[in-house]
Length: 114
Length: 116
Image (cartoon, rainbow over all chains, first blue to last red; front, side, top):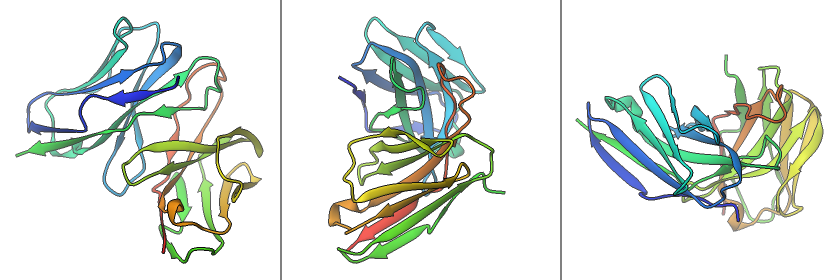
């Protein structure tokens, strides 16, 4: 079935360290995987996406890794800053669904220690 | 200028009332959405409209009725509000120029609905 979940509901990281947020998914038939960031009191904001035929994609200070063998997705944030504090959602677009239909996971709260 | 805006930001009402939430986007996008986020932060799509036509309609009580007067607006009307309707409702939009690929969705700031 369609299911996207996260290993850890909360993550605390020292400022300046790298953060790794993990996500497990159960639907192997998905075309895209996406990471969204939601700051307190705001709507989700797109961070980065990765197509299912890729293993890795890099953005500015962020890297997404996709391991289809174990159905695992991760978001790495380099040199974590206070502004990175937020809830992070992994999400997927199942194949054969409308390209507009995003299935969101339950979210991981990232907090930064000074 | 705010790309996707919603009004009101907060809405507190009694059970049984009817209320509407409005959404407008000035991005020129073709597709708009409504999402519901519960108290555990779980975010789920409710509806999607493309050029004023309904394209996604998830399992949502028929007390919820979206209305799109034009492609820049998608309003959500809720009849006979129930306690379980309390949540944050997000509007979003995207430019679906590539139907077979992912098109980034831009979210509004949300409307926190509290039903007493």
